[in-house]
Length: 528
Ligand code: G3H
Image (cartoon, rainbow, N blue to C red; front, side):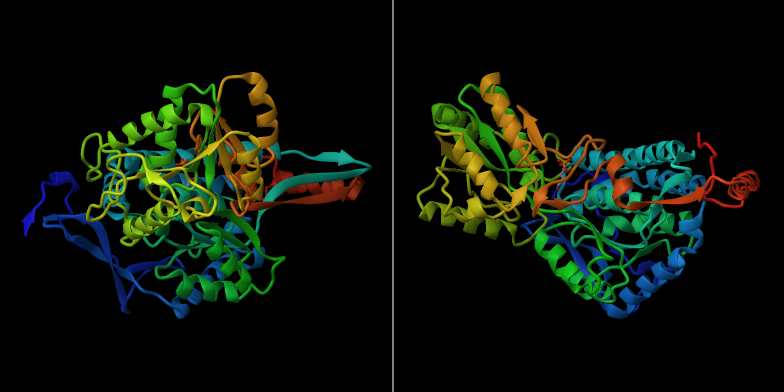
């Protein structure tokens, strides 16, 4: 087989047999069974998937060992980490982020190979994550500064702060294996929780360059990293009832299955970012060019593999023909190629079964009366299927009902705005919507309704999570808790405080506590 031309900087020169895992501050060597990791990108002609390396296939004993390490480190609230002064925890995080920044090239390369994300988007994922960590540090300083005080009501003083929740089990998704996972893990750690982290199925080797940074930046047991299938690793941990927070970005079925395993439901807090079926609603007076461009980005950035992707497009009958024609042309003008190729917008799908699944959705829609509007729609490659623009899509079609999480675009025509509004109200999802139009008399009542059906109304803009300072959440099966730089610190902590009646004994005691700095909690130190 001849080799395809891959720039030297992006070639896989050595396989990564990732045989270490992090438990209790020690990088242990795995001697058990392993799972091979493949990329759907070919290094040869003819096509063949590329072996990247392997990861440990761990099971219950290692999962429980990791849980024990996290529990010991938390030590029922007495551990060094949950009781540490905020400035010292921040220092550990600063050490970590510096070490992480040195791994950019390795991680970006693995993002491309493991999940097929384009070079600019992989770089963006890495840089956005570093920025997220730095912003989290700054926000936590501010949070701590705001609580460096005492308040008094009805003769009772209070020193109110936010404290950790306990042990956090953290599971991230394959589409943002670095950014979204760290958007859970980092706030969980910095707030004083101890953690067990299992990387996603795809995008797992890219954690390898960070294992040593995790080991050396935090006290032992604060971060424990295990590998394997969710069923084998996460389920036994949940069954013990010793997890305080399930932090998961993925789908609601796995989240439900895991939370059902936990025997003490009131102990378990859920921080979940789940699936969605975000609609675009295109009103008759929408700016056509802008709408087409935003819908293109919304439906097909990273091949539609984003929870925030536009997964169904509602277009008003009056503008339907012009939109459909212009949009289909632009879809076919996109460039497909390997992630490092200049200007590529469509890239190989990391899940080997995805093209066949998308094909099933297309066939089902065609059988029920839809047509493929674009010439290339549905064309197969070894690891890809060209996005099909399907029209008219109806509610009985699978592509309307299922979260496709891939390159296929269902378009629904509507006459009366009540049609998309009713569909959204009936939907199990409620993350975001994109609303396209100009007439403020039409927009105003719509905005007022849509904000009650989803959690972000994007006006003449595609749906997206960022900027990360904005709240990211959803209704129904789309999320629990809110994430953002600021909100995540709250989601992974709880308000807890010291209160005392205003009398001589208490006032003297508190003064001495502040003077001697013996308590890390009772402290009015101002972190700059
Ligand atoms: O997969 C869902 C992500 O949160 C989407 O984030 O909108 O920044 O691509 P994004």
